[in-house]
Figure 1 (tube, rainbow, N blue to C red):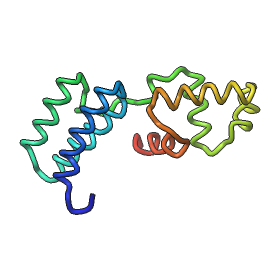
Figure 2: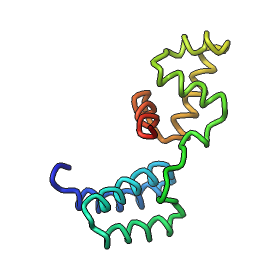
Figure 3: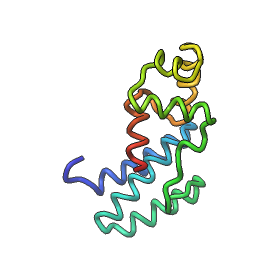
Figure 4: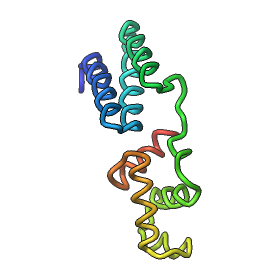
Length: 130
């Protein structure tokens, strides 16, 4: 939303509440953090306070960025990192001595836990944490 950061932030607040209502906690947290960041960047302190109040209502910490991968099992973390390195399910299975179907099952769980839909989205989460 080029040139409209305040509106983008306000939309982010609404999106955060919608995601929370739908049970998509990770998406709610990302939307709220992005909205809050926009408000801070443009000096919209009243809206930043609204974002903080929304975060408190939803029980979301916004002061620091928690590691989204903490919710994953060690095996899921291993697979997620290998996906981000560009390995196919078959190559991951060979490296970890698993069947490709087992890798697919773990990856499905990773996508659900992190609320992502594709390998590129997963890579984006890792890149955002750097």
